[in-house]
Image (cartoon, rainbow over all chains, first blue to last red; front, side, top):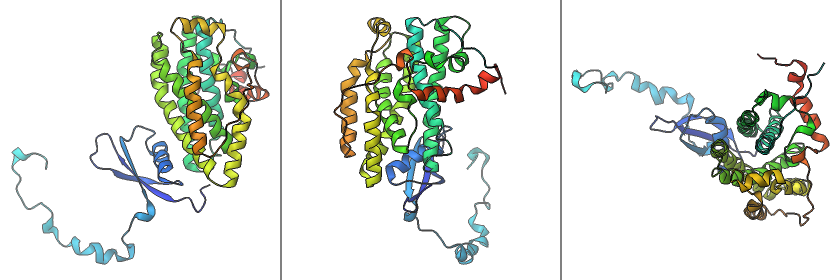
Length: 95
Length: 258
């Protein structure tokens, strides 16, 4: 069992066809080197990735779920920010 | 009740493939014993992954041994229907898991050898062995990386982890000499450039082991008295128990599938 002084790490994987590293989960490890190895062993067993980042969970500053009204609701009424009011010429294809 | 053991015509090449296959199967089985018991979930996965790498190596080597032998045997029969005295693995690899330090030191000693060995075997004149080597080398390189990182952390960790790592090194040291042994049957394959002479791997292995041990503030024993016998089927008392579990299903229900 992971002891209380074993830090938590967040794992980000860049997949074969993906451009950006995506968050895939977290794990416990005593230091960055072992965190990288554990990430390889846990999250890339089925050929998921070509690159791994590990970040100490303590380095992440998260928004407060209790503030979601203030943080996110004001955007909900601004539908004009979605690019749905333009006619896209067929030649452009998928944007 | 139990199925009888098979006989194997151990020509030099069959025996050579069997020895490496047995190494991989027995160490892989030992690692699988950790499944669900490792100190933390992350290491549970790491140990099982290494075990599966080794099981994959064992399968290819058994299949090749069976093909070279050219009789009725196949990879399953070679794994499940040979007796303890017919097993040809290194004594080091059948040693019990013990504590985590023992498991890691055993892995470290063997992976350090296997990494060098498979890399050299990529130049084997035997195309199948060279192909197995190319795949196994990448796996062994990772096993070495993982186990040596742990050796450093155990050695430099707490007083207890240091003491356990040192005890494991002292206990297992006498089993390391067997990795570099050559008998007449292998000498012929070495001369034919099918096999690698392990004597040439001894100095680089020792250099690498010494570097990691020194970084880990651990001491390698001075003793050069070494155990031997695994390659010719003379095993420690532990292998019979391991095989009775590994083989129980096929021995009790021959040919069972699911």
